[in-house]
Length: 96
Image (tube, rainbow, N blue to C red; front, side):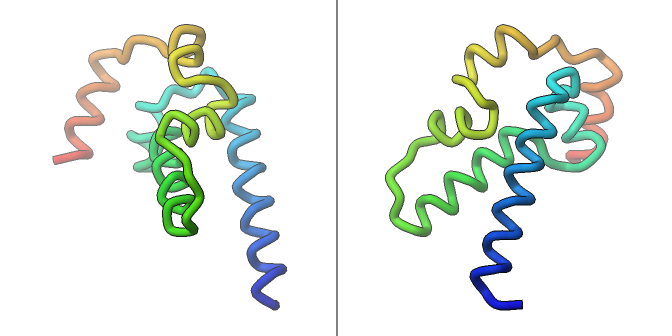
């Protein structure tokens, strides 16, 4: 496979992941962290790092908006729920 095709496939996979997460707003970031070790914020940080590596001017809020599909504060107000004691305990256990 040539490099351009690989890049296009990786970009398509990223877009599909972001679209899937957008459809699953019921899945909280803490659930993603507990199950997979990453969340929407991690994707935002990776997206920002990729932009910075390529000299693309971007800040964290802009990267988050790309991943969340809206400003983070708006997403948080609409969709983020308070983490349960069980979720917090699982997070603490997995991040020691």
